[in-house]
Length: 133
Image 1 (tube, one colour):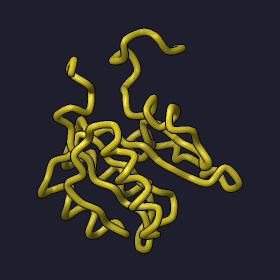
Image 2 (cartoon, one colour; image 1 turned 60 degrees about the vertical axis):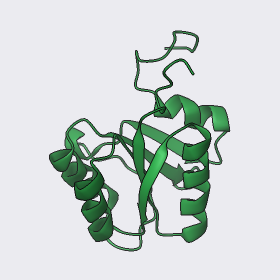
Image 3 (cartoon, rainbow, N blue to C red; image 1 turned 180 degrees about the horizontal axis):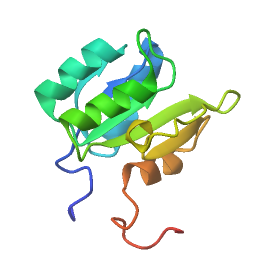
Image 4 (tube, one colour; image 1 turned 45 degrees about the vertical axis):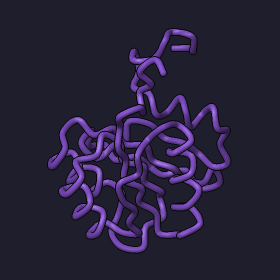
C-alpha cells in the first residue's frame, strides 16, 4: 500500500438507525479505516470520541438522542483535528449551522455513490490531485 489516507486512521460511526451504522461501518472498512465504535446518539458518541480519539467521525443526520451541530462542536472540543462527514437524505437536506464549529467538513446526501463517499474521506488538498477541486 502507498500510505492510503485511511491506512492507519480510525473512525467512529454515529447513526440512530442500526442498518445505517452497518452500511457506514462497511464503507469505512472498505476504505481501510478502523472503526473503533458505533453510537446511536450524542452521549455514547462523545464517550467513544473521548476514549478513541478518532481521526474521522461519520454522523447520520438522524440520531436517537441529541442533535448533530452540538455533537460536532463537542467532538472538535475533544479532538480538534477530527474530520466530520455528515450523511443526510437528499429528500431532506439539513440546514447547516452558521457556527463553523458545528459544521461538518463534508456533507453526503443519500443516496450517494461509493466514489462520493471516498472523496468525502479525504481532506481537500490531501488527495493525489486526480479529482476536481
